[in-house]
Amino acid sequence: MVGSLNKSEKMDDFKKTPIGKIPEDWEVVRLGDVSQIVMGQAPPSTTYNNEGVGLPFLQGKAEFGEIYPSPKVYCSKPIKVAEKNDILLSVRAPVGDVNLAPFRCCIGRGLAAVRVKKERLNYLFLFYYLKLNGKKFENLSSGSTFKAIKKEDIENFPILLPPLEEQRKIAEILSTVDKAIEKVDEAIAKTERLKKGLMQELLTKGIGHTEFKDTEIGRIPKEWKVVRLGNIASFKNGLNFSQESRGRGILFINVPDVFSEGIYIDPNKLERADFGNPNKISQYYLKPGDLLFVRSSVKREGVGWVSMFKGCKEPVVFCGFLIRARIEQNEISSEFLTYLLRYDRYRKLLVSGSGTVAITNITQESLKSLKIPLPPIEEQQKIAEILSTVDKKLELERKRKEKLERIKKGLMNDLLTGRRRVKVETNG
Image (tube, rainbow, N blue to C red; front, side):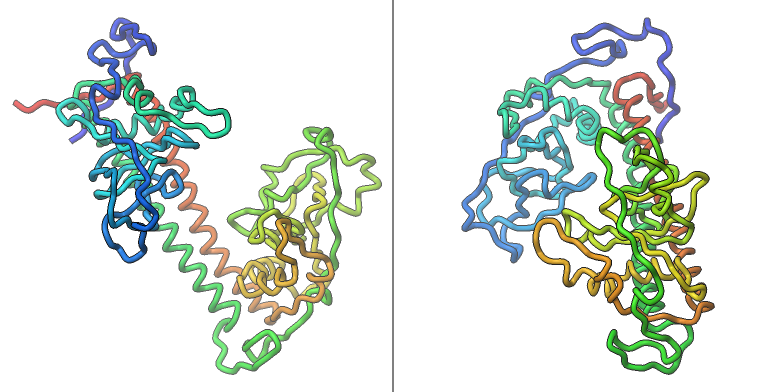
């Protein structure tokens, strides 16, 4: 088991080295002295396949995950091979990122495999050490437009080397936190699947209905109506501003603010800009319940995304890349409408005519003409309440992940530098 953690408080416990002060019983070594470096090489493209013939083929950083990569192709005649538990190091832009090889695999020229000498170095310790320090390879990279590092750069890279048993304990602590993060990720994925299923069920079949009807937008409960968005809401494009005006003036909602994971825009994250005379811009002030759509986005999947403004203690306006929808009828829930318009079926209807150029757009007219189903207000509220409960669960899980990631970052900064020592327990 892992022993207790001790804070190194006495400077007498440290010694000076070329890379700073380190614990007395730690060493500074070249990475090449405690590992074997295997530089990747691209095999002939004729040997690539998707049928699982040969070894999984990793070409570079593009296939990396948080810890393990996800190969997309196989190679029937690999030239350079990484063994299981080798550290995979990105040697071409971006340089310095690392993953662990989960199995034997072929590596292309965008990667190097770092194979530890087990009698001196624990592979998991090195993985975390390079996670913390790998970006220092940037300073060693050559090439003005395409950064790359050479084998000798990797071999000469200095690393801190605690006693082997301490390395193992450090790795054990950090991998325990990673496993906790992995469990939270699984819980998040499970909850997201639940939400997707509930949205499909609730936004097409409603709650407790047994009779349905066919409409121009598909099959919906008999009690529901089909309405045009323009008949229940008014629309307005936002205000433009200059970069020089940012940082002062009134709070405003920008495009990134709309890409919230929950349906509400967070007023605590808003920027300020000077839009001029407050009296002239009062028509752009937002009210609780207003919906904001992304009017223009460089990515097609971004256009048409919608979030809801819940309110703020001071006036808030919105930028020109957004369209405000203000509901004009009492019998409509803003929350329900936000969930409905985030549902794939209606987003696709909205953006289907937005074009295929690099920057895609929606207009007020496309919003006004969009046909949507409308349940009775009580059912709208119930549907929104169910989906909101799932969103709150997701928010708690994401906050838990953020907390674990902060803990991990702090532990890495302390344990991998010797500022905090692991007490290694001995038997007997």
